[in-house]
Length: 120
Length: 120
DNA sequence: CAGTATCCGACCGGATACTG
DNA sequence: CAGTATCCGGTCGGATACTG
Image (cartoon, protein in one colour):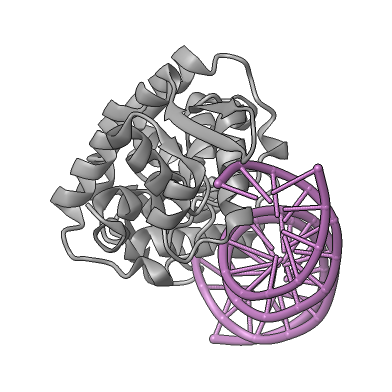
């Protein structure tokens, strides 16, 4: 595999779909809650700006990780749920987590972490 | 698991260690090449600035993903190789890759992707 | 050859106010 | 309530020149 092949390889696609400050925690709630309303999710995650949360949800929807259901009416009511594609990420996420638990047991203050996962 | 626990969970640690534009491709070479010299790696990855490549290698070394061996003398000669901890990421990376191959078969132009994976 | 020092642009995430 | 519009600051990555 040379560089040009690598650019398109699946690993980068997967990491790209996970790239976003709040996506892991969003996935966590979607995995454990079957269906969650926007404001509920927003309140569950303190310190995230509404705009940013919406951006990341939109990206995840475009990537097919979650489903967005809008129940029309007023006031608006939007529910998010994990998609099949998103749920299929479960094993990979579990593998990452168990790796960290085995090899990086020390807690890390993630408030200080700020590294792109982006690709080229 | 509430928000504060989540901040420290293993998934975020793992994604943090993978967060960096060139880390996946660096890992690729380390997985397949046993030992690789800096310039060789640099030449293998076109379009990456030497400074940036060094930064990411240093982060990966600090995270314990790779080992850096400096053979003193002149000219300097530095070899990088995967560590045990780094190699242990293999299954998780393979899981991500197979997920992408199954669910995101369409190729994506990664040159256009630029999303942080960062955490909070 | 490996690494450092600068400078810079782009982008991401944060804060706030506003709309339908 | 869900979403948009602005504005802003920090940080990451890119380019280049330089050093030991």
